[in-house]
Image 1 (cartoon, rainbow, N blue to C red):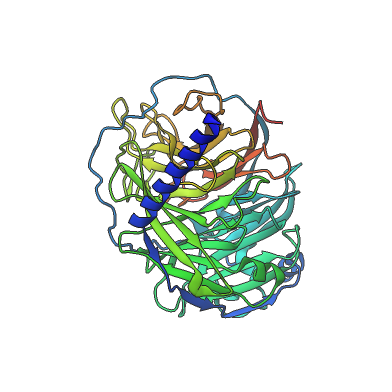
Image 2 (image 1 turned 90 degrees about the horizontal axis):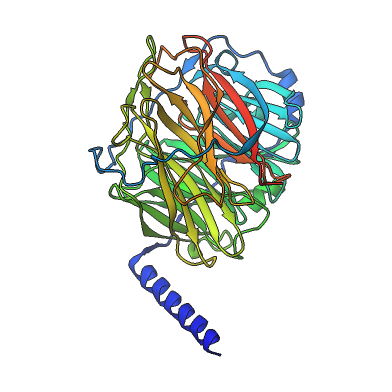
Amino acid sequence: MRSLALVRVAYVLLATCLLALSALAEVQRDPTVIHEVKHDVSLPLSVMAKNAPPPKPGMVEIREHESRKHVYSTSNAPDPVIQTEVLPQVGTTDLLDFDAINGTQGGAIPPDTNGSVGSTQYVLITNFDYAVYDKTTGNAILNPTRINVIWSGFGGQCEADNGGDPIVLWDKIAQRWLVEQLEYSQAPDLVCVAVSTSADATGSYNRYSFSFSQGLPDYPKISVWPDAYYLSVNRGGSLGLACALDRLSMLAGNTASMICFNSSPSDFSFLASDLDGSTLPPTGAPSHWLELGKNNSSLKEFEFHVDFANPKNSTFTGPNTITVPTFTLACLGACIHQPSPGALLAGLGDRLMYRLAYRNFGDHEAMVVAQSVKPGNGSTADAATRWYELRVTPPGSVWTLYQAGTLQDKKISVWMASAAMDKMGNMALGASAVSATRLKPSIGYTGRTAADPLNKLESPKLVAKGTGVQTTTGRWGDYSSMSIDPSDDCTFWYAQEYYKANGENWITHLHSFKFNNCN
């Protein structure tokens, strides 16, 4: 009886804390409802690709849209979680490993490399191309094809142009593919979204376009949640905007709308929780949104509850301020050195890196994410990677920091990372690596098992060593992609760019692996 009483007291205290936090958080109501411009169903992509005209030769440099200065400070601050211990090399088994889309095929620089793994296929998307691979053999099922071919016959900008910042995701619940990219070549600015009608990425798609009227929907990032596809954009290049797309209607090919909340001027580059694993979030759970905090020792978390039947019931609540170890932002512009004759590369230190990978373990929920930071004492590199694991225990309570660390090298910059977790709670983190003299842009990964000491990563593996540098622009693909195979919930797939020769002909590389304790 005493134990039961203690449990009851604990839950009363938890409820009291939740009420206190909710009282401090702002609850936004009365969202903007954006109705689709148009929707239809496509022919199979395999057919449209055969009939598509050949792409124009040459490579386009993707325009960097101006954004308002929104960060608090880039000044140095001590980092208390720099990892100085050297653990054994990451205990993984490497699987498929191959080069994929390159700059000559993609037609744009930087590539903004992103990919996802489904039941039988791996889909890779870059500025401006889309390719499909057999995930068992690595053989190409659909060779690099312009993304706008997916919208052949749709009309307007979605069919005519490729605006960039593309994302492809595997909807694990519905066994479908989700594709989006922005368009801004003419008014109005659009986000084009397509949902496959089957598990085959070369089949037909339910296609949609949504208008943002005024204000470029820059840097769009989309995620999968049971009640919606959640989309974040930096409206006008700066102001963070949170939107929910009617997932169930889009899966059915029906008319769909988008429900959006404007944020405050300090909000920028939200990431919404993206579901991994076979265990769904608690019933009715809101989507979780994360961004950098108002100082260099915090993150801000928000909760998006959407109601498409009655949009006025939708709410965007927050922030829940999460205290994290102090960090110093990596450079906002181009500051990362390559060996000569390489250009300085962009650090994108002003945002969290895609994805915000979510998983429900039953007794707790977890999210992992990374950002680029400035190295601390003991390093002359230009960038390092800070990573976080956030948890709620029990599920449905308040998110707090569970662990965090900073991965840095004495001379090698490590940045543009992406993280995810497998069903065992092992975390993998892939990133780009480069130094001014020792290493040309390369690709590596590291990780930790659930049994490793908290806040520590095992020693990394290099999977694609660069033999060339980027010479013509300071832009480096604005994000990379770590995804988890839904078939075994163990195998990680990492996609990132590197160079084999000096110039602008980047090469994307896919590498799959799994931890030895996951079966």
